[in-house]
Amino acid sequence: SDCRLIPGATNQDLPIIAEQTQLYTCRVNDLHRNAVFSDWVKVEVHQCVARGVPPRLWQGEPVIVLNPQEQRVEVGQPLQLQCAAMGVPAPSYQWYRNGNLLEQHKRKKLRITHSRVSDSGTYLCCASNSHGEHWSSAVDVHIGE
View 1 (tube, rainbow, N blue to C red):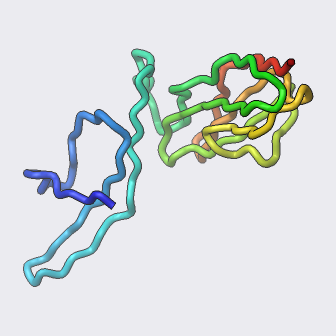
View 2 (view 1 turned 180 degrees about the vertical axis):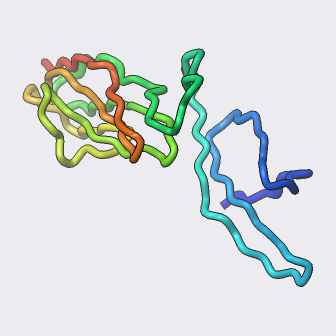
């Protein structure tokens, strides 16, 4: 809802130093004041991206930039794991527990509102796009009293 013009951004390329996650679109005008807009693109900023990302010969395949962290949660409390990857096109996500597909969990964030002991296990996230797939680090989740 907070749309702003970027002063001086009148070329076909927009070099930026991204400081926060934002959406961008490009408006193209002709001499008759007709305008068309590009699709929106989301630029995500993650604080803990390793050096060397993307790889030198990167061709858009998913690269994990945020791995999930180990969790210890009491029964009934919420559980949240997060994974993020960069890729062109933007990757889709799929979560697994103990090697088993978690059919409903297809977002960067895995959320379980009320955790149960059966939610304990080793979790992995797979990020994939048309150029391939990449797996996050495996993390252990402990649910207990």
